[in-house]
Image 1 (cartoon, helix red, strand yellow):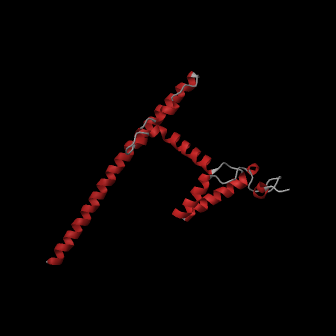
Image 2: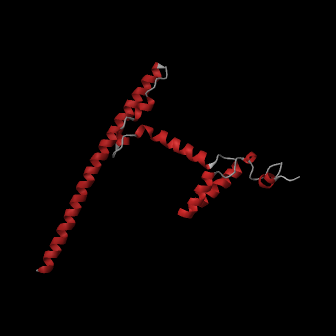
Image 3: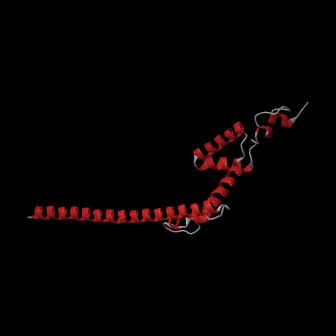
Length: 160
């Protein structure tokens, strides 16, 4: 009995490269990514081969599904931080995710108090960080001035 696909998938019982084992057939995206990975930087191609081996052993999703899911997760995680600029993450009101009510008035009151306490603590820590940075800058300037004065004294002493 001649079955051309039987040579590929290991016959009627299935083999290591069948869909039954976990969808390990190479997709066009995976082939292109592997070839480009080897062309650009060989560890990328090797990582894709390792991924395919992992997929074969565990029956995991294909590379395109994994990449699409990772991209969606990253976009949703970064969705609340659209305002760009230095320090925007620290300045945003991170309590937004905790604003929904649970329906229990006592718990909601406790939660609001804790959030307010944590927000005050965050402001206190930001102030302490700012004060320490200012103090450290003053110390650096004093050290720089001392080193410069020492250099100038040595330089003047060498000419005389």
